[in-house]
Length: 280
Image 1 (cartoon, helix red, strand yellow):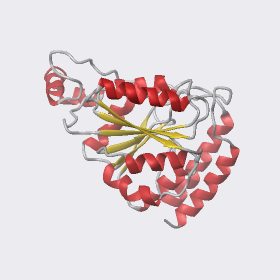
Image 2 (cartoon, rainbow, N blue to C red):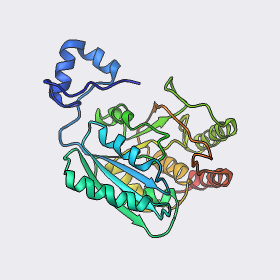
Image 3 (cartoon, rainbow, N blue to C red):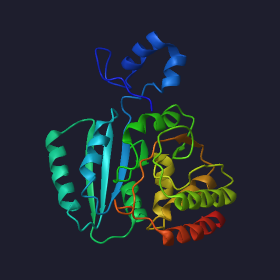
C-alpha cells in the first residue's frame, strides 16, 4: 500500500505545490508509479456511510475517514440502529460542527426504521453534493487511506466509475470463508455475463461515481438491501460508463464480529443480476 507523505514546507498533500515539489525530485514517472498526483483545490469527495448497529467501530471508522488528506463531506446514514450508534453519531456531529474543519464537513441522517444497506446508500446519494461519491461501510473491513489511489482515474479524466477489487493485485487480504469467496466469484461472473464487463469483484463495497453519473441513477435505485450492488453495476454498465477496477486491501469480519450478509442475500443477488441485466 502506498504511503502518503505528510504536509511539510512544500504544502498540503495532493495540492499542486505538494505535487510539483515531489515531481522535481522523483520525476513525473516516479510520481505516477507511487500514486502521487494533484487534486483540484475545489474538489469535494462525498463519503456515503450506511450504518446499522456499529457502535463498536463507527467512531474509529470516522476518525480514519477524517484523516484522509482530501476535502470531504461525510454523509452518515443511520439505518434505524438500536445499539447506541445513534447517540454516538449525534455526539460526533456536534463535535465536528464545533471543530469546523474545512477538510471535513458532516451530515447525519436518521432512518426511523431499519430498511437495509441499499436504502441507506440511496438516501446518502440523494443528499450528497460532492464531485465524486464513494460508499464506505462502517465496519472497518475497508481502509479509507486508499481513497486517493482509487480517485486518481476519475480525477485524471479517465474513468466515470471506479470499483475497488478485493481480488485484484497484491494488497493485504484477510483469509476467511471459502464459500463466501466462491459465491462472490459466481455472482461476479454471472453479472459479467449480463453486463459484458470483466469485473473481478462486483460485490465490493468500494464503488466510486462521478456526481453526474450517480445523480442520474440514484432516484431510480430500488433495492433496499445488498441487491444494491448488482443493481448499481447493471445500471452503470447500461449507460456505458467508463469503469476502472483497482486493487484494495480487505480485513473481513467474522459473523461473531458482526458480519451481516447471509445466504438469502446471495439468492436475492441472483435475482437482481437477472432482473437488472435484462431491463433498467
